[in-house]
Length: 227
Image (cartoon, rainbow, N blue to C red; front, top):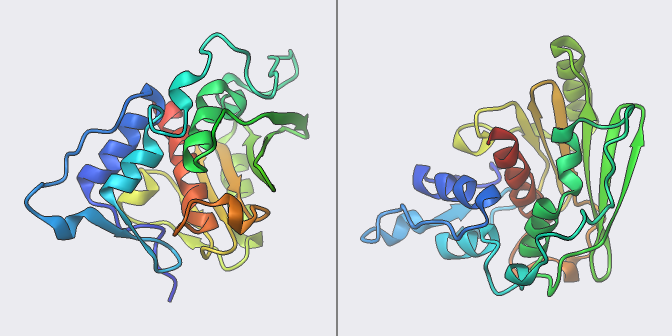
């Protein structure tokens, strides 16, 4: 049986959300006297410590995100066209999320990206050293259409299963096995899909699967959407 992306403690999940859009290091809200509570299980069965989670979630980590130019344009040179993505959808190609990608993959600088807008789907593909990771939002407005598209995507993804408990952040969400690399969330009729299926193993942080890394990036986007 597939395991959930991570069996997070309440404190660890709260830390991830607090760090995601605030650009601050996540506070250690887990009990310092309980070392066993500081490890979490990924979809592929590997584990991650609270310390590593906080490092991946922080924009001020050693990856160099703190040196990013806050006044710089979004990596994908996003323009809010009249017939284009909503502000929420366009956020996936913002500097904030580019910095989240930088942190998740331990990149030395903010990655460049290419965006697109076709058939109500906004995409942002980030360049990694040897591969790419793709974020997309199906930018629909109605509840029935939004849910139908999310369910259809979940049906297409290889061996997808629901994300349950705290890791779903309160929204419908699905994950794939660690090597497949997909995580999707539904919020406000918009489906966020982080597809790390083309990520080269050498572009991943040591010990992290594609799906665990995709989840980390997706959680940053959801946290920004919740602000």
